[in-house]
Length: 392
Image 1 (cartoon, one colour):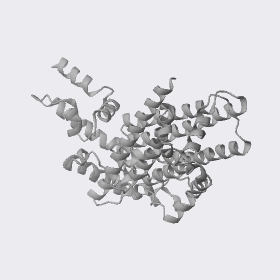
Image 2 (cartoon, rainbow, N blue to C red):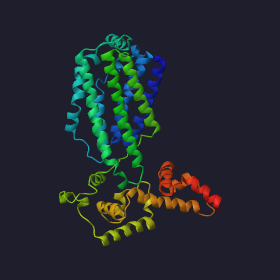
Image 3 (cartoon, rainbow, N blue to C red):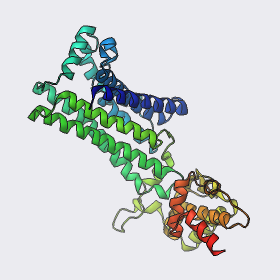
């Protein structure tokens, strides 16, 4: 690919990363998990800026803006894992734990400080060597160091992926909002970063071991993949910094739904079994609350909110919905929302746009509305409306 075109592409992606970073920073104002996601996009944006400077040929005019973060992925790994932990209801890291996890990044930066602060002419010569089309063989020690850095990041990404997977199966028992989408976006980012590093390691080892391409080609492929991730993040709307789970919801999600009789009694589902009569009373209380107070119209309704509204403990409400009512929180709430939407569509003389019906029925967007409607009636809202018109 033309070097100038690559430079333009990297600059565009770097600008996009900057915009996402600023949006997140403005939303979170330095608090919550959003600031960690802002740091992630900022780190990726800086690397894309470096790529833009190098491939556009601008680096000789400002060489000291480059190579300021050697071993950037040593920061990216711990920060991404901390972001996933915060989003899933874990407490923030104490300062000492941050210091321990970022110690490798600090060590690499100190080790490379002589290159960071070297004269401009030396920096320009270094980057010219990197961009040279000649096949470069690095010393074995450097190869081991670079691969070890990538494996460090890989370990954090695997931990993050596993943590997200642990909550994927339980999210519908706790939320009836866009948490499904947010979880999918987080898993997308985790698997994208995993793929990004796998691509780099594969290309780098092929280049060093078999002379396939150059170090510049390895860097270009890595940056192109990173640019795609950033642009996709913007397209998918990953500027949402809301918590995926609160600490209470995390506790509920980590409680086993069932436990074989042979296991210790301490891990029985939600600590105890409810009598049939009590379960029925609570189920009726839940249905009455949803039907008469229309709590389902709150697009951000959660299990903990509903439990507070009826004066019950969250784990008790969860147990009744899952075991006695044979459903989960997401399906239960969306069933009421879909019925509300049907009533609006069926109302004589009313011709509301489906987008308005979705919002007024408690859905946060048309996509979620369509999925829930089709899951309930095996047709989309527009198909339902068309059949109603044809039948009348």
